[in-house]
Amino acid sequence: MKQIRVAIVGCGGFAREMHLPNLQADGRYQIHAAVDSNLEAAQVIAQKAGAAYFTDDIERVLADKQVEAVFVVTPHHLHADFSIRAAQAGKHVFCEKPMGLTEEECLAVAAAVREAGVKYTIGYNRAYAPFTRQARQLIAGLSGPVMVVHRMADWFPYNHGWLLDGSLSGGRVIGESGHALDMICQLIGQNPVRVYAEGGNLVGQGSLDTPDSAMITLGFANGSSGVMYLSSIANSGYPKEEVLVSCANHTLVIYNFERMQIVSPDGKQEFNLPKISKGQPELVSAFARAILEDLPSPNGIESALRTSRCTLAALRSISTHEVQYLMTDSSS
Image 1 (spheres, one colour):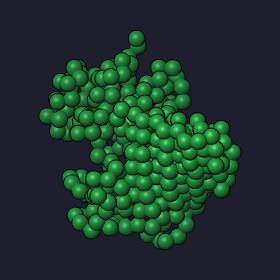
Image 2 (tube, one colour):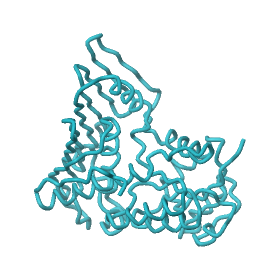
Image 3 (cartoon, helix red, strand yellow):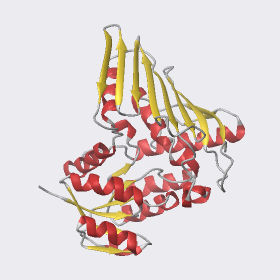
Image 4 (cartoon, helix red, strand yellow):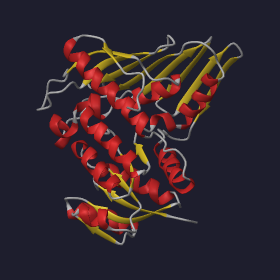
C-alpha cells in the first residue's frame, strides 16, 4: 500500500491525543517527522510514531523532499503562515481550524494553495461525523427549506495558556464556532448570504478580550436558516453538543454525536454509536484518499473560506449589531 509521508507541525495535546492515533490507525500514512518549538513535545510524538526525526525547525521539514503532507496543529495564529509556507514547498496541507485569524490571511492561504496545486483540508470535522453524513443523505432526498440549530455549550474552555490570548487564538468564535457553521452549510447544501450575531465575553474572566459566547444566525437564499448556539457559561456536566434539524415534516436530532433520533411520517427511528464520534478519523481518511486518488480535497479551500467568512462576519455583527451580507461566490 502506498503511504503518505507526513510531518506533524505542532505537537501539543490535541496532536498527541487525536491526530497521532488517527494517523497511526490509517494505514495510508507514515509519520516521518515531528516539529515543535518545544523539542520535548516533538520527541514524544516522534518516538510514539517511529518517526525518522524530530526538530524545532520547520524549515528542515519544508526542505525535506520525503515529506509529502504537513499536518498543522499549532496555536491558531500560526496556521496561515505555516500553511502558506508548506504549500509553497509543494506539501499537501491538513490545517486544524481556523484557516487564519483575518480574511487577508485566509485569502493568502487560498492563493498559495491554488498557485502550488496542492491539496488543502481544514479541520472542521463535524460534517464528516457518521450521524451527520446520515443526516445529509436524508435531507438530500427531501424538498423544501431546512432549519438547523447546533448547540455547543460548556464552561469556559478557553481558560488557559495561549487560548486566553485573542491575538494567538482569535477567540472562541473564530477558533471553534466554525465547526458548527461549516456543518450547517453542508447540511443545507448552500452558501449563506447573510450573518447576524449577538454575544460577548460573558464569562468575564482572564485576559481574553474577544467574545466567548454567541448566537449566530445564517440566512440562505432558498429560505433555509441555521443557528449556532455557542456558550462558555454552561455547565460542562451537560453534554456539550446537540444538533436539531427540521425539513419537510422530518425532525432529526443528533445528541452529542453519540445518539440520533429521526422522526418522520413513517414513525420514529433511533440510532446509537458505542462512543462519541465527531468525524475526525473520517476527515483524515478522506484527506488521504484525495491525495492518493487525486480527488477534490475534503473541506477544501472553498469550504474553508466560506466558514472563515462566516466567523469573521459574526464577530463584526456582534460588534456593530448589524446584519452582515456575504459574497455568494466563496471561491474568490
